[in-house]
Length: 222
Image (tube, rainbow, N blue to C red; front, side, top):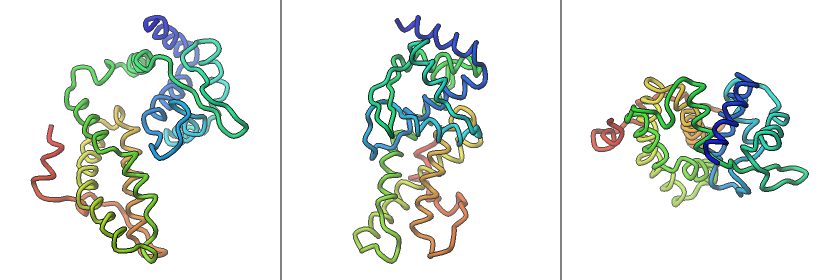
């Protein structure tokens, strides 16, 4: 079955080319990065795919290709559908990744590059979806109590330095392979900045703001 679905994914890419590739990539990324705080009714939903396409610089309605991926190619199946939501699951994530990797001219999972694989492992070890949800739940400064201030301080001093170490390396070494992870890391930093900026002011991200000394920096050495 896996081989058949991998062939189906390759055929889909052969027919739809760049547009099909972007939709498959958006599906994969949406399945990886849907925040854990949301109620998940499948691997990904329509809204997350549309949002991811916009982040990739494409203003495109994926409805038609999602329908064909399900009905003609059998790569996804509906798990929930209502008037406002549509969720699917990926029937064979490995087959999907293989087809995407081949289209990009690389081997699945980063191939023989252990540094790429390690960076991805370290990023998800930070539980970025949890981190983003924690930041979103924190109220703005005037309404924060001492307990919430302690939580924000913990995130800023423990988690964000490691996130920035990842972001700097991913941007410089693997901007294409880790583009979804880079986007999520930037959203986390933006959310953190919004919690500490005075009303009406915006902070500009600069990596040194979050740097710490050797014990934390060593966490992302390859």
